[in-house]
Image 1 (cartoon, rainbow, N blue to C red):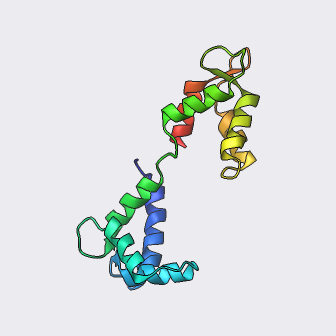
Image 2: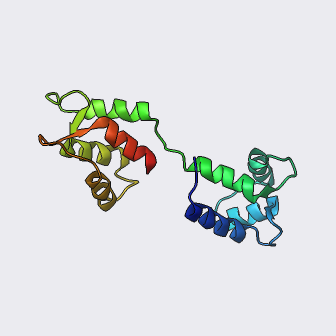
Length: 150
């Protein structure tokens, strides 16, 4: 996934906070300290495994590009387009035309699947970006395309 300049800048700030010694890479010791600050118990072996999973050049530390690769992966959508389309079909009204869902039904589906992760305000704002036809229907594909970009 392509990160915006804002995302890269935000991740750089986080990286620099973890890179306590300012050496340009995150060591196992720095990860261990971070885990302790976050109240997470991690053994040196667990930290070494985390580093090894991220460390692409094998130097035992995580540089910014390696960190950015992990963070970009974390930004990937939790669901594929195919899975979202399947979920919409499950919630679709029985009398709905193929590939269509009402705004109310879409809201119910999103609250069911995303309610604890997304605020009501965010859901309302997201849905407001969708075109509703003259019969009150929203196109599945348009909704999926919008959700995959958020």
